[in-house]
Length: 370
Image (tube, rainbow, N blue to C red; front, side, top):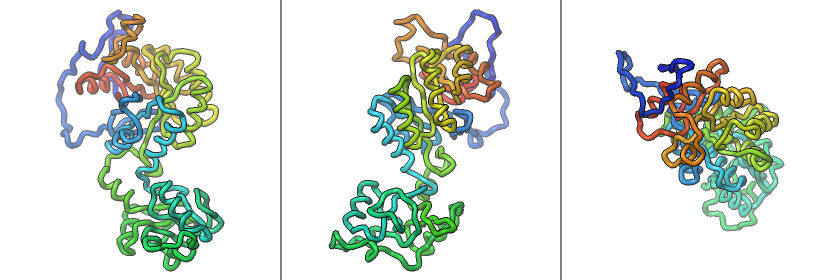
């Protein structure tokens, strides 16, 4: 985001949102042409500059799905056990997908009961059948058929082998990289709801479904990763407990880890960022909260891909009253943005947003999102 307002360096004046207004000016941009895309980390872009809070009364899996479908991102709170929080991440990542990568599969010698149990456990209505998949799970193998609700609807013998029920002739398959238009054409032409994606060896590597295509059409501005899955963030903390939580969240496919603390300019937070980056440099990290340029630079040097700014500006936050600590939010944003600009690291404004106009002021001050 561009910086539209800069306070004079060295001055003692510090500003909050209520202290300023945006001056109107000439524009050639129509409201319908407005583009709100923004970067929330070095590598992650979303389509609206809104991130929902990592509070236990705000964001879990359902809201994270809705936020991503709207173009933003939700941060799943950490007042959950690490396992449950990771399951919420999986819920979001599985909700919508351009292609389900390494889908749940089953072997031809598995029984009808095992297949039905697998469908129920994973909330799916069809399973590719592959060689050497045994009783089912996420294992690759050469495709030999597909088992859908239509194949098992009137089956009554729970011990009947999958090979006797599956569709195995005239299988409709595609290669990875098929366009959505071509996938839709094949699904309609063959009156089927699932397309199996195979590699050169005819191994099952993915699944494209009618439901996912329909969801994509309903939410054209959804924030998605490069595999067509909804974006999701999750909060973690410092120390060994935070590190173990981070590992589970990374395994679940989280897009953004939020190292969420009241005082981000502390050695334990810096070490938490370094530690996660050592195990997964690919994982994007948003760290905070801070309120100064020095703290912003410290987090960036530790490896943070975005910095969360705000010490005590929230309507229910008592940090400034109880501890006497904080920086007026607009000034904190501008100073942090200035420090982060040369590093290509976005700043996220956290707190103090009481009205829609405050979002506009935060963005004008240089924040990537709020």
